[in-house]
Amino acid sequence: MPTQAIYTISDMRNLAEDVISMTFIAPEIARSAAAGQFIHIKCGHSRPLRRPISISDVSGDKLTVIFEVRGAGTRWLASRDIGRKVDILGPLGHGFGDTFSGGIIVVGGGIGAAPMLFAAKAAKRKAHSVTAVLGFRSQANVILTDEFDAVCDGLVTTTDDGTAGLRGNVSAPLEELLNTKKYGAVLACGPKPMLRAVAEMCAIHKIHCEISLEERMGCGVGACLVCACLMHNGERMSRVCKDGPVFDAKEVVWNG
Amino acid sequence: MADLHVSFAGIAFKNPVLTASGTFGFGREYGEYYDLSELGGVCVKGLTAAPRLGNPAPRIAETAMGMLNSVGLQNPGVDEFIRAELPFLRRYDTRVIANISGNTVSEYGEMAAKLSDAGVDIIEVNVSCPNVHAGGMQFGTDPRAVAEVTREVRRNSRVPVMIKLSPNVTDIAEIARAAEGAGADAVSLINTLLGMKIDVNTRKPVLANNTGGLSGAAVLPVAVKMVWQVRNAVSIPILGMGGIFTGEDAVEMLLAGADMVAVGTANFTYPDAPLRVRDGIAKYLDAKKIRSVTELSGAVEMH
Ligand SMILES: Cc1cc2nc3c(=O)[nH]c(=O)nc-3n(C[C@H](O)[C@H](O)[C@H](O)COP(=O)(O)OP(=O)(O)OC[C@H]3O[C@@H](n4cnc5c(N)ncnc54)[C@H](O)[C@@H]3O)c2cc1C
Ligand SMILES: Cc1cc2nc3c(=O)[nH]c(=O)nc-3n(C[C@H](O)[C@H](O)[C@H](O)COP(=O)(O)O)c2cc1C
Ligand code: FES
Image 1 (cartoon, chains in turn blue, yellow):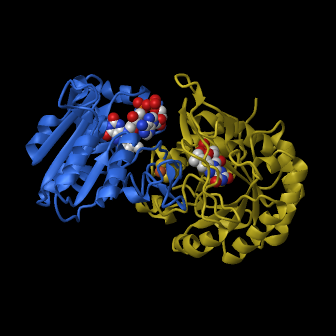
Image 2 (spheres, helix red, strand yellow):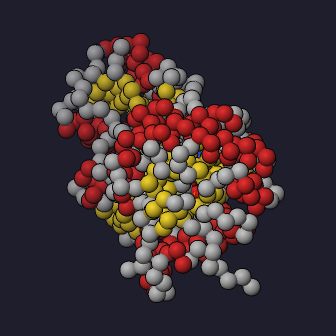
Image 3 (tube, rainbow over the protein chains, first blue to last red):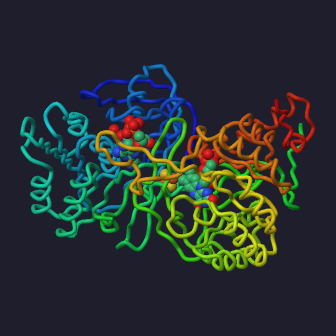
């Protein structure tokens, strides 16, 4: 059951330049949140539209999000301090599945690594073996590797320029993993071209794949249809905020 | 506590706060947040004769105290609404207003006949959607076309007919008079104002549809002025909307001449916005020792 209320920032720190980890004391949301769900954050009085940000971690009454400063709204949020209050609606959306059999691979691209930490922890709690494949632009953008290392059975990091981990994107190490063993599912969040490559690879290897999509939102609860995208072979529209943001990769129309 | 009951086009409403079409789906989602029976009524998402997928994304852009949308009337079609959605809404003790958009005059009539048979309380006729090529605003900017659509819907409907007016006209009073003259039982206004937002980095409009409809707090003064203009032009009841976020916003709209109000974009900011507006109206009435909300309607004192 989602709630809308004012919550206090209990912790805040920079993970990289313009990438902020922010923790709220938000018992109602933290206790009912599932991996892959998001919260809708009001970013100041002058902005009527809330900003959707994925939940990156929960612990007891606390909820953590990790966001990149992109425009005026996220800049406003980044200018808050510990102890300040923020208006949050959540948890919203349909998260990752949790009924897989076999090992799980989580794939995160850039800031898309954030929700995959929650997904990795959730899978681990269900006693799955979890391998993480994380891709970043450059060493300066690498985030959360220690946190993933602490929960995952395996971790591969890549950077586009080779300044940290393997050079290149997540495709090569993912392909290698899929070739060595039959995994139960691949769960991914990141830029669309990466998600598409991951989905296509999983289709070839006949592995269940779930991906988290991004779309501009209005209500965030499924009522306004602003976030709808073409799904299911182009036959139906799905709402990213309510039917997603996590979808079975097979349902996605990539050039829709 | 003050009396919030309103009689509108012969229909009794428990309070004068409705939800604006297209911002509230068919009620299911916000029904998870509160009991829909608390609302005066629900105006459902705009319906068309056949299902529509709507426009490509992005369909929304934030603007100063407002937003642009270009959803383009995505909906499952009038038949599916009657089959799958209306029975859900009917479980609540609230009024149901069906909002319709036709490609042709006869399509408006056919939809009105089906919906009035299915048992909606009022039919709201959208002749003002800025986001579709055929139909929509093309009807709403021409008084003769508005009269023709109004007559056709009136002839086919057993329930009150409310014409939703576009603000994208030179003289909204003239359009309102055309609707009243053709038999409209009420009018609602305003629909969204045409607008455009450009991303200065890409030099492209943010909306894939290039242009869209402006709504939210930014449009309140425009809506208040237009409601006042229409109040002075017709004697049928008015459902006022556009930028209402608080009880005081709603009171302004009522003073300008509206008999009831609808809350749209505010739902996106606060899921319980219509209830906040309702409670805000009640608080205002109590503070001013006004017994009934109906006393506010058109009570503005001009200079
Ligand atoms: C389900 C979901 C989960 C997300 N999770 C995260 C996350 O964990 N961390 C993170 O850093 N970012 C995340 N994003 C992206 C984040 O919502 C945007 O970066 C943010 O809305 C930008 O707001 P702004 O005011 O700074 O930017 P502006 O460009 O000024 O925003 C203008 C408008 O466009 C919208 N918008 C702009 N970019 C995006 C985008 N990429 N996706 C959706 N709406 C956008 C804004 O919400 C706002 O309504 C997520 C997006 C979605 C849809
Ligand atoms: C996302 C969105 C979708 C809308 N869809 C419809 C629609 O289907 N039919 C209609 O008559 N008006 C539609 N409208 C217009 C609203 O009903 C209302 O007239 C307008 O938004 C002004 O009110 P507001 O400022 O309170 O939102 C839509 C508005 C928004 C924001
Ligand atoms: S944002 Fe309103 S339906 Fe998804």
